[in-house]
Length: 421
Image (tube, rainbow, N blue to C red; front, top):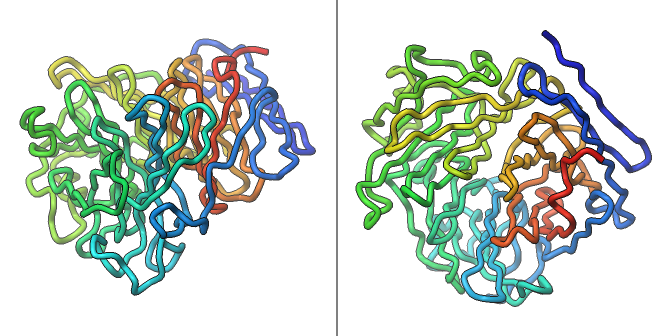
């Protein structure tokens, strides 16, 4: 059975798409949403919403360095009353982007003195969102892409497996100047993308940005030693080497097994290859991940029969048993959803998906009924949107404009998004 799809496209700077994703959800009622053109040409938003630019690449920071460009994954924390702290990745590689300082002038705490990627910290007034201070936290990493929040701060992931790279680093919210890197070897060495952290069990679920990537789970020995334990990889019960891009059926739950990774930090980039030999499932470029209400949500940028992206939900059973994998959404074409990358889950249960497509990128929402709606559009260029995250009270949505090098804060009636107008 093929479900009908409704798309609204209003030219002249106001755009919206609404779609019932095929063979997935119950409701077919459309959810209209138009975006208002931003006269400044930065970010189109729904009527009633506004944004302010927090900072931009190249601006000076409080510690004397400059804001690196290519802001990507990001988390928001409230460690003290009246203050917000952003911890933000910068996906600077060997040949693309600029760091907080010039090549050859790395500080002593740099992880790799020849690399310029890392994490910055921005402290904001919780009411006005005015910037109080900013500083470098982690530097000397490569392609610090996404990550995830945990009780101690931000878990920054390297999407690069050059020698000495391919790790996750802990970045603490209280770090006021560049700190010695806290590398988490137990999380493995591979092309890390994002981490969905379960605050109840301290288990970490990690995506891998490869066309034949895996989904990993780290289980700590105990909560007193949260970064010491064992690494596992997901397999589908009775279906070894399951290819999720083509084999997953929307709305169907698949039983999950977890296979232990025997060598989490090999010299070669072959963790996933050895996992495939033991029956691990394959995901086509696993990217954004977010743990919410006892479940892991994650995106595959090239998943699906049209290579435009999938959204999965891992239902986590009790005591680490009985986990089930469900395909929530699969994009039928780029007009509906174009290569979802970073994701977050709203306090009211919608999945927000930042696109990394090729022809203008949206931040889109996915309702539990299966409808896609528009939240924001990058009006300043074709670069991806990245790092969506809410303040702990849910009042502010923060977002990065990757190529433009801007971090913005969005306010508005969020709970109205995705509802029938």
